[in-house]
Image (cartoon, rainbow, N blue to C red; front, side, top):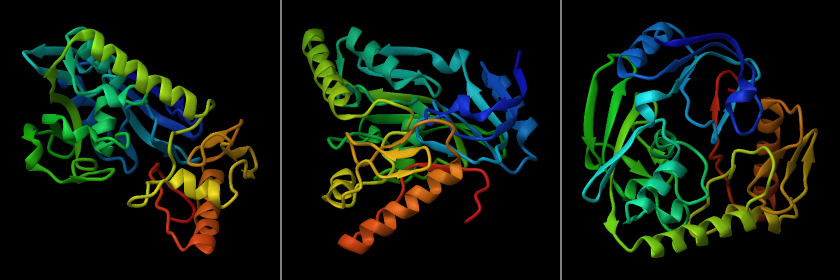
Amino acid sequence: MLQKFKDFDGRNLTTFKIGGRIKKLLIASTLKELKEAIEILSNKKRWLILGAGSNVLISDKGLDGAIKLKGDFLKITHHNNLVSCGGGTFGSAVIKYAENQSLSGMEPFSGLPGTIGGWIATNCGPKEMNIIDILESVTVINKKTLQVKTLQKNDFGYGYRYCSLKNQYGIIKANFKLQNKQKEKIKQENQKFMKYRLSTQPKGSSVGCIFKNPKGKSAGKIIDSCGLKGFKIKNLQVSKTHGNFIINQGKSKAEDVFEMIEAIKKNVFSKTGIKLTAEVEKIGHFKHD
């Protein structure tokens, strides 16, 4: 049965711990329930299918609705070297599953937050690769027609931190083509990437990297070179560990984050001539939209 919650605190749905109230939170465990949830929200203006909330900024005014995926959408299976997983599955769970099956290819993603659906929707990845590099096919649902179809990765557009499926479709299943490898070697690689992220990424409430990396450059290093590490606006601070992270130090507002993003962009452009582009996705109504 579709689970329904009213007036849910949006701060509890994102890793930033920022956001207004969600008028309707729906939790779907089957395709039938997901279709029902989409139909309930279809006449609403501001709603989304939400993964781990690790790359989104929910407006202070909140949203009309949000859908979370559970049950069938968390299953992981494999056949030979093809791993299949639901769109609501945490990437970390898929990485561990692949390791246990002696399947290699996902190691560079170890330590990254988020769900498989979110990873594909943003074509996330470390500097070594993007998630779509190892994707073979994806099953999606059209948010307007409720049509479900499976697409090969050549059937849609994608690029650096971009996937054309993002707005029109919900990602309900993905198939990744991996390679056979000794389990111990995969484990060592996973530990290497995890150790690197634990040592370089700051602790605290954030959404990870705020800005896309300009071609051939590091946004974090650019921000650092402008003397912005530690820069504060209200209860927000640019991390002293990594310049591309903004840390919510408590009770921050989404509009404060927008203000800080604009301040960083302006400062960086005035000093370097580089135009930074925000990677975090704004959801809902913002004053300057």
